[in-house]
Image 1 (cartoon, rainbow, N blue to C red):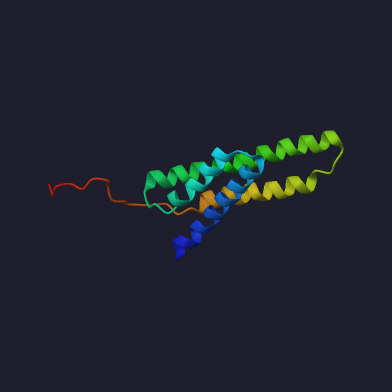
Image 2 (image 1 turned 45 degrees about the vertical axis):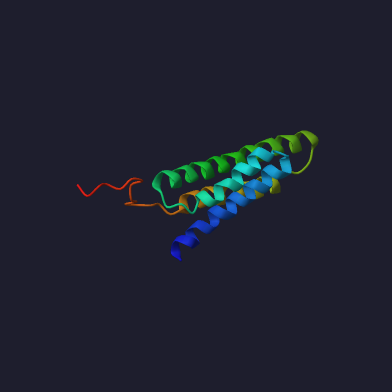
Length: 116
């Protein structure tokens, strides 16, 4: 149960990222984001590290998106601080979800030895 609670923010962050890419019309990235969800459940160290890297990259994507939107809003004279706060919070949540993702220690190897 504890591991599930630690994985729930990662699943939510991944689904929010898929929605972000969907709104932008980037369907291959939507598919990639959705495909990451089942990998979050695989208890292998390399796969968990891959998921952590993907979530950390997603946090950077949120910051870059905030930067781009802020520049557009500043150029058009629109308010931008609230948008920066919201997307900054989403980036922080995504980074926190990456950090919170449980690590796997002592996982069994992919191939079993013949008892030597």
